[in-house]
Length: 325
Image: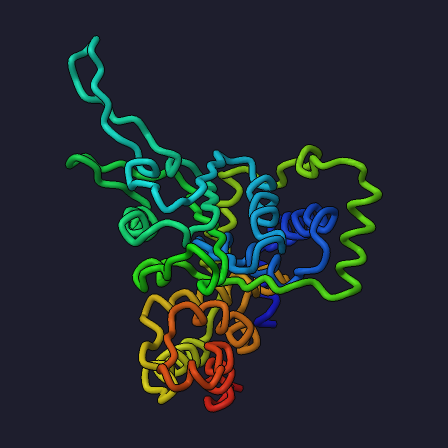
């Protein structure tokens, strides 16, 4: 009976239809990567920014572009380079001789879906220019505050930090991303499917026939639906325990912040909605815990030397904490 009340209270039919349509559109071009696509959609529905990491050539940028193209909103792409300045992203004041005044010329960050390609190619000075806009959805330049239009989502790609010419992102920057999605090499069968698909297409313009599935306003209203989903108190306690344990774990010298706890809850709500449920289960929490925490926690040097990964530590933490019934 209780489930029926929830059903009536939250209608997820439009959200489910949109998610299926986006997945079907992406499946025409992207082979595999089902978990990554679920997380990308969940991140957008949870009103979060998303970091996509992988070696060159695994379709990080293509996947981000497809997601952006499936939403009918103002799209902007910024290629990060070592010589990029903050004003190249945010905009700058330009003197207008007609009015004899300085006028602010908007930079490419002013949009709804912003794709930042190879975000870790730019140094910390340029990264810090994104702090305010990613957290507060506003920019303060020359004493003037500019509000960003809703929805505002940053999709950023990066190569693993061991690669040539890359910089580690500042911790404060990493903490602003809801997920870090790691895109791995395809399996042998997937690679054969990629080659076959590309060979049969006989065209290099894969994005030409992609039609938007949602408007900007649809995204805003679906986010409100997601945030309104039911979460039992025992699930909130479960999330708090996971993040608290990360701060007291001997393998880590930096644990998750309260922002990480909120990110897990919002991401779990979005994942539940994608699966057609209007309530969050412990499985939703455990599914999103690694993508939410892997870029926020830092291993101790000895654990790093042993080859332990952040995902290993998150798995140990989850195993240690009793699952709510």
